[in-house]
Length: 114
Length: 114
Image (cartoon, rainbow over all chains, first blue to last red; front, side, top):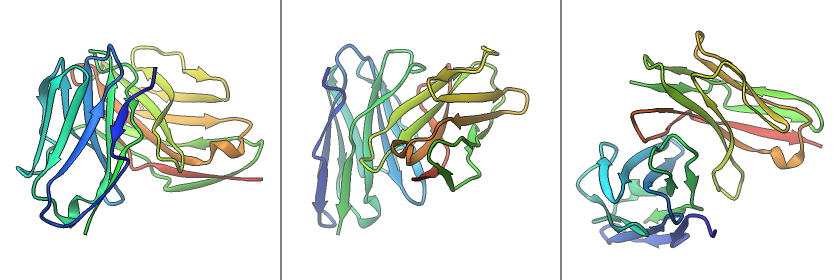
């Protein structure tokens, strides 16, 4: 298995632009998670899905952030408009439905907003 | 709210020696899981070891073992025969069975000296 796939690996954009991060979970995994990692706040859960349905989005910082999972093999995290404080590494992870088994992480997307 | 605390921002160990990384957590739940994840400079998150709270026996994976003290809410990681490849950030994480999101500590940066 190729593991969790994220794209792009690096993204540099200017403040105010729309940014879309993409994730393909491991086939057969029913839970998908989006995390953000910063020096100040560490690793934080933004949102997670079970069977393509958002379960907990309490970590989404504000309305500028949105996430979708149109099918079992694809998810997006969108930031519109982006701000410099959104600069971080964004991880996607997937696991079996229960979520208590190992979460397999993607390589992350390093986002820089100028 | 559940919290995870790693009190050692940085640790250092001599190659082939043993090092212990500390982690404490706070929860009122009885059914949960604890993890140690490793993040090398490549930033890929890799599961090191997993412990179910209902199991009294400490988990072991090759050179990695944990000391799980449920009453004290302590979950330390012991790395034996340290290798240069063990140099990384190590994150302790907690998950409650009824939820899907991992709660991470701030991490401990481990250096291995040749």
